[in-house]
Amino acid sequence: MKAYVLLLPVLAWIIGCSGAGEKKTVTLPPRSYDVAPDKIIKSIVYTPDGKTLLIAGQDKKIRFMNTENGALIWESAERPDGLLSVAISPDGKYFAATCGDNTQNTAEVVMYSMDTKKELWGKKGLTNDVQYVKFSPDGKTLAVLHYFNIILYDALTGNQTKFFSGHGMDVAAPWGHVDAVTDIEFTADPLKFITVGWDKNVKIWDIEIGHEIKTFPEGDPINTCILSADGRQIITGSNGGLHVWNRETNLTDTMLTVEGDIQAMVSVRNGGYVITGDEKGNLTLWQFPSLAMISNIKNAHQRGIWSLAVSPDGQYVASAGGDGKVTFWQVEYLMQYKPMTDSAAVKKDSVK
Image (cartoon, rainbow, N blue to C red):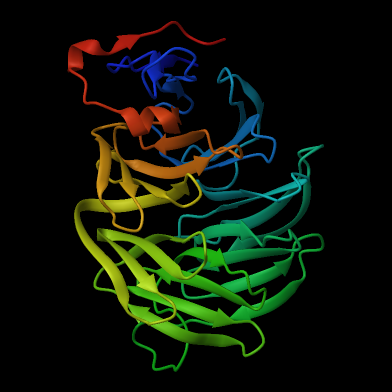
């Protein structure tokens, strides 16, 4: 596996204030590792201790990487199709993965033991891609997002607990998404959750009622969403825009048009900043709630950025690209970033 260090103009030591005795902050350049050359990495997530990164993508394999040195710890056998999403339970005891290409009955959802890496249960031979998978905050539920439908499973047994039906665009129905459901956020209220999709809608669902109770319509297909730190606002990333929806007023607080298709988004610094990755491979840091751009790293990945993950201590953001690479970015570095010249990039030795 090859490692690359992008030598951008970096201040090794940043002094916050003048005068002796002031605390200094070390700013480190990004570290990039070649995981699956020329294959899209679709999904990454940190383990709760921050020491390991779970990686999955187009080459049909699930991998665990040491976040300190990029060494591969474990690699699965090939799944039936390309991996689309992975998730780790809050207690770190289980992980789940999904795959599928939407052309044959090979899509699946599988739950694994973290200790043994063996399958605990699976839903296999599905006809539609499983777009996204996520554990509830208490770890008891696994949410699985399909085309149209949202299914909740008991995380330990695999028993279906709730089914929220969607439908095709040409089918008249009162509820549900009419295209792929692409992301989910659980709220502080355990009976409510939020989804977004390619049908250009943001929906708030009530588990007891059994269908959505509020819909915010956007103008473009939506790929990703996060909640503000206080849960009052929904931030969405779409094909050409960033939107901030206010759950109390039902209106858009902020709407920003951007170039490119935002594929991934995370928040850092207690929700004070948002980081996005787009189809062009640009990594952008935004202040929240103003959405003022702080830094923009062009071509951080070739063939787009498909997934972002924040370390549990909030110090690092990992990005995964269409180039088969995983890159670790120090948040402090992104805050201080200044554009580099192409001649500043230097290739480093391989990490064994």
